[in-house]
Amino acid sequence: MKTFSMEMEAGNPASRRRLETRLLQFEQLAGSEEVGDQVWRGYTYLWNDDQTDAILLEEPGKDRELTIKDANAVGGVRKQTWHFPSRSECTLCHTMPAKYVLGVNTLQMNHSHDYGNGVVANQIDVFEKLGLFKEPLPKKSAELPHLVNYRDATQPIEARARSYLQANCAHCHMKWGGGNAEFQLLATMAIEELGIVNAKPGQGAFGLTDPRILVPGDPDRTMLLHRLTKLGLGRMPHVGSNVVDEQATAMLKEWVRQLK
Image (cartoon, rainbow, N blue to C red; front, top):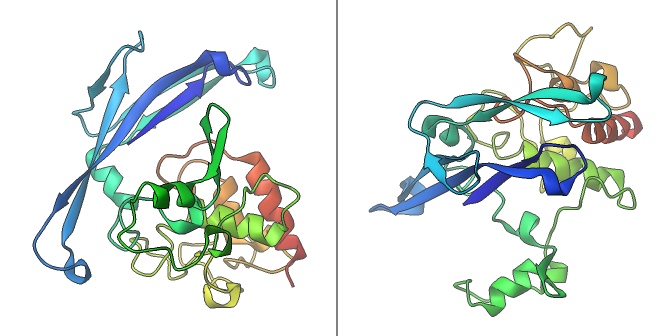
């Protein structure tokens, strides 16, 4: 379960309002994991204006236009469309190859979390102490793989870029992940194994000259970067995203530029 909120005044946490809460329901089926022994159903609940209750969304998805105070916008105000996903849209990303529940994995959970009251601890260590694992950890959490914060400029840009792509793209861009692009973006694979370096895009050129999915040293011909900076038809991610992450795209552009 996850609740999504938005600052109605950019940069002012006190203006944050709850927009929706998403819930994944698990049902155990007969069989084995290899042939599909489970099903997950997604539900969306919309918060009311009083912020006192959230109501189950019955219709097939819904859009709501938000008015955001933003000192950097023309006139100090900008409009943003928030999309509430339908139940079928949830299954576009929450797939069997991605293990349904995105983000609850070693790579993304293996970092410190502020639990309040001065308690900061590694989430994997906390899970182990709570007895949530069926088997003991194979290694100490410090020795297990993890992602880095892509905003952290002290980290290597390769790690920042691969972490961003893992967290935002790899749940679809993996083997049998549900997309129709024949490449992967998993951080656990070497870049040469992903099928993206100098590979022709399969969905057209989108106005670029002689594009490839990833062209080392050439951001202008790199389709992966172009699709992240594009709005409307052809944008990636194509579900749940209609605002360009300027900080992330600038970081990815620099990563592509320094590749050889």
